[in-house]
Image (cartoon, rainbow, N blue to C red; front, top):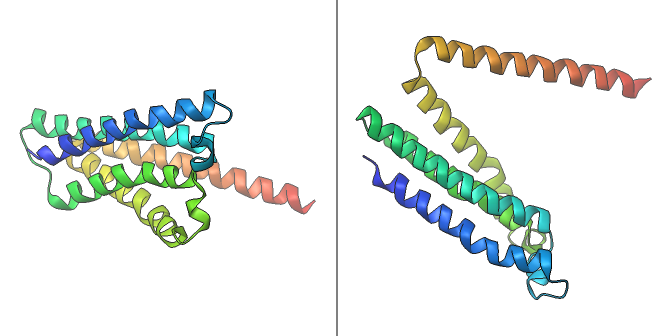
Length: 162
């Protein structure tokens, strides 16, 4: 089993716990020094929740491995850990004024790679573990959602041209 999934999941969960302290300071104290560090309280709250969610997702991946008595390949584990830790980090960076400074390139790089890594890892897990009929159903749901979005975008662009 990839114990790293469990370790990084616990790490992500603990970061979510630690973020509850500045989150409380930002929301409940008007003149807190944390308000200077975290200028966007909504993004801080999103990062706090996302660190919890990603920790649980890594724990779920570990349970999948354990229950099926198999081990994920490294091409799944590495993007899964990378995306699970750095995806909430994007929100944490957006909660601070650092994204307007020299950290902007790192922020843009993370925004481009982290969600793609998570998407790749979870699609690979779904293809690997779900039966064929559920893979086909998942593909149908994604295609239907894409079609709904495409129809909405074409209708909204026609309304803008009027």
